[in-house]
Length: 229
Length: 229
DNA sequence: TAAGACGAAATTGTTGACAATCTAGCCAAA
DNA sequence: TTTGGCTAGATTGTCAACAATTTCGTCTTA
Image 1 (cartoon, rainbow over the protein chains, first blue to last red):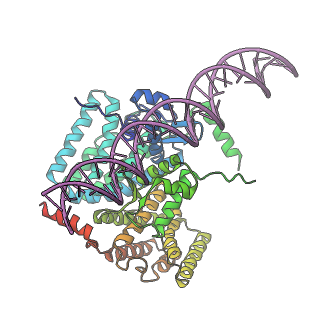
Image 2: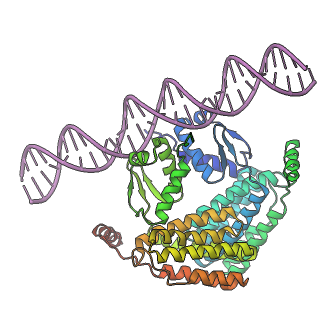
């Protein structure tokens, strides 16, 4: 029978988050209540609750009487996200390296294989999502749910940031093997080396961002911003 | 005049959070919608939104059809909170020491004076709130709003944890001067020493927690938990 | 007395109608 | 052509009534 219980606000959140992680929902996209209602087959109440939760995670921005749009992190936001990721992930990676069992490492290797497969199959959306998930998987080995949840937020933010400021627009700013080498170091129990690889990995991604204005509209904004000194 | 705009869900959140920080709202306290409606003079919609936000911050727990109660963090939650605080606050303190201007340090000193005054006046609720606020003030010097917000959550959690597992029940587990010595080290620009003081400070608070069951009801829970091995 | 069943009251969950606000298209005037 | 104002439609915000569920007191019965 499978009563097919209706979607809850968590389901809606997860769906939207996943689309953001896959970069199929671009920053600035307007999310109207009615369209989401019909998409998920739920009432406005559920959508509204989802919006509230997503606002808390900085995934959408909610403006009074104007609705919800996918968040557009500023360059300063981007700086803070990477700074926070470096602090958190290095600490969590240290714990993870201590805790990791052979089984855990096997799961990480399996995940790496998935990543590579998605890349070969040119399934970019899947590859982007898997790349993000890798960091979340890693963090879960640290046995600290609070920090995991926060890092998860940061990973979603990173996806938005790359969509906005990524050089190639979408994908290939992972020049290669960073994730593999990281797991190698973990397997050798060398937390310091793993941490260094991680920091370098994040710094490399951050360094590839370009913050110049792109459209004419954004030009106007920056002009007026600098004119108000 | 003064149209006295109604409270928003953020106002309600802040009020509840402040009460938690002051330990005037004990963990496990039931929060009924109607009572909060009449207290704040708002509709149920607003209270409901506030509940949703507070749930996200682990300040209340929301059970389907049963309503909201102030959260009761488990011992494992407590461990994670302190672990996360040590990671985050040490990193933020490092940045804060770099950034701190003479003016910033003066504000911190002023805050310390407030703390001492509240303690002398035996205004415990105020003292507890100020003690928590000190860590938030400190973190704000790090210029990372994201990490600040997360730390703020952790500080509120700490308040709940101390209310639950604090040895003396309420207040005086700050044996003295830790905050002062921390600012001293910052003023000398010695981030490492400041970090050490901070870690020791947090570890000291954590070490004073006692996780034995207190009420008969909690006895039952632990008994059944250990019986199921 | 204690356990269980029942029902009324209280509390939470959901829905839909209505109000408030914003958006877009149109028209008129400079 | 551009600017400004205006109206109609669309979108969001609020509220109150109703439905579903829980809670608590009472009563019965062993």
